Length: 138
Image: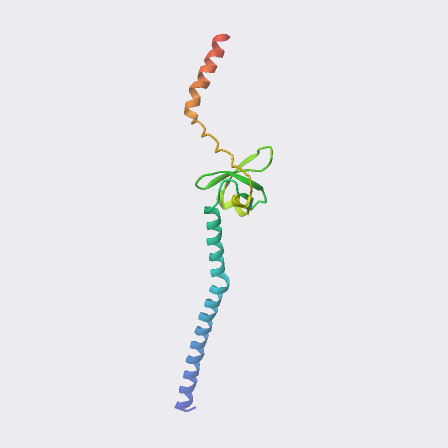
């Protein structure tokens, strides 16, 4: 082998190494546009749907429960699942989609938000008074 043929082999090895790096970069770019970008777009749409949730919307949860939103708090909401008034408190992240927005329902009047419950500390004296009365009766 002469010196020139050795240089040609080294140049071709360097070019093939560069070519493999270019192919790897192209594959990563394609993977970004095929997998990562659409998932981020879907996540943004889901977050917007949950942030725009309104009382009266008919929703489906990821568990398959269908109900109407009764009240909304920061991270949770309460849904009514039947005509009998069965209510379930769920996380907003458990909502798969809004089936019927409140704007699409005609004549629906959203129920009033339930009154806030008294803290347990206020209930304790009343319970103690009742037990004292029962003890006096005996």
